Image (cartoon, rainbow, N blue to C red):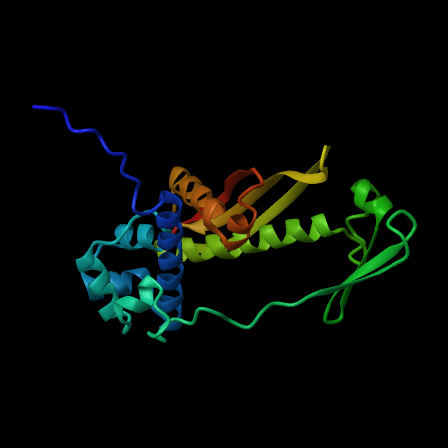
Length: 246
């Protein structure tokens, strides 16, 4: 009997598309829960799913079973289509009002200067201080650089996201301080971001070091700014300054 020629079968869906869908669903789960003022422990009680399982779903680390999807949709007063990205559900807003900022630049790159503006906050910048950040005094909050503001955004987003993750897991964050160093390097295509170093110091009630480190690393990978800067390597040095008993 002649052998049948093998046929190459293409995958129906690319893995990257699956990951993107899981992350979109994770974002919608968090948004829906926050909008309803629920904690993970509340959703766990409503659905019978464990807090650990719910946490992983909200981080995009696991795909829900059909039963879990239907149960979550019912608990959050949504249709399954809302969580799967359908536009007719209306339960989870796909868009929110945009955040805005503006900049004004005068002159050439080499001799000019500019300001980055948000409301009444104005941060001056120029090429000399952008290329040599050591010229900017820490105490001078009127002078900076786009890279410094990027570092502030990463540090701010990470700190807030970590506080949310800790709270969802049943811990009490008292203080989180994050320092960011944004590094650049010259290449064939010009100046590019090469690395971001985050140093986090936190005071959290009732958490062990290893648990805190694992949660901080997960937050670093998944906070909004980190995902936006996915092409830039980011390192995290996180430590508990002190812990307090509940």
